[in-house]
Amino acid sequence: MFRQVAHRLLTRSTTNHSACAAATILRPYSTDVSTDASSGDSAFVEAWKKVAPNIDPPKTPIQFMEPRPPTPSTLPSKLTVNFVLPYAAELSKAEVDMVIVPATTGQMGILPGHVPTIAELKPGLLSVHEGNDVKKYFISSGFAFVHSNSYADILAVEAIPLDRIDPAQVQKGLSEFTQKLNSASTDLDKAEAQIGVDVHSALNSALTG
Amino acid sequence: MASTAAVPFWRSAGMTYITYSNICANLVRNCLKEPYKSEAINREKVHFSVSKWADGKPQKPTIRSDTPEA
Image (cartoon, rainbow over all chains, first blue to last red; front, top):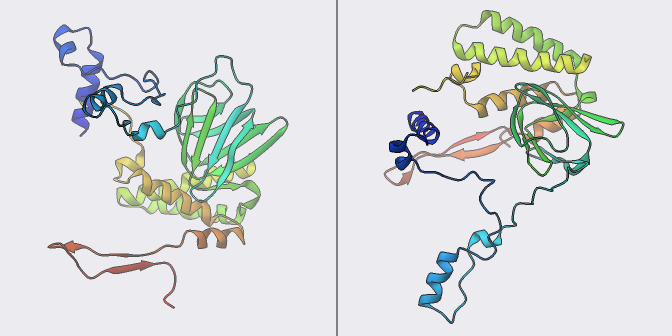
């Protein structure tokens, strides 16, 4: 499967080479494709009219979908955040000034007008800044999607406000997993112990920082 | 040509992302204060039955459950 991906990546990049260009299938990026399909697929509608001119062509699924909201030409002043968990929506279309998410590449600040991004999140602190209020949550893991119209979707598996964390449990877990890491033999044991150490040290720094 | 993207340590140890994410979530839930901890553990309880199929017929199902047998 990865061999195919690598091959496609190569053919996409070599558009200058004439021999490869003929074999390259040029697919448009999703932002270039028109998202307003309310009139339906024109080729289908024409073919239908030839066969059954008196009957209206049926609607296809894409006509029932709302078109992608257009990217505003001026920079919006607020970021709209959808912060969701599998069992509840923490924030639903909340207008905020800034969100700082714990991406695997480090703490990432998202402001209105941020470049569209997909970020994988690591266990860490998420803070939502609205005026002078800052709400902090500890996230176990998840993803953050920033769209071009200044909408941010943050998906997390577990998100807990900091006052619900039990410091004694955190210390106990940290020492337990550090011990397990030292005594681990198989790769899988080592990985699990490493995850334990990472999560508990992130919890620790969230409590103290 | 092999892709040279750096793999996370759990991926190279044979773990999938879902397993990693679930382990992280369980560890975080364990560090909650009461009563939130018992609420979270209750929320995540599952009860389901799985059966393998052979020759187009289901074999004996196994029930996996976090709720004690009533």
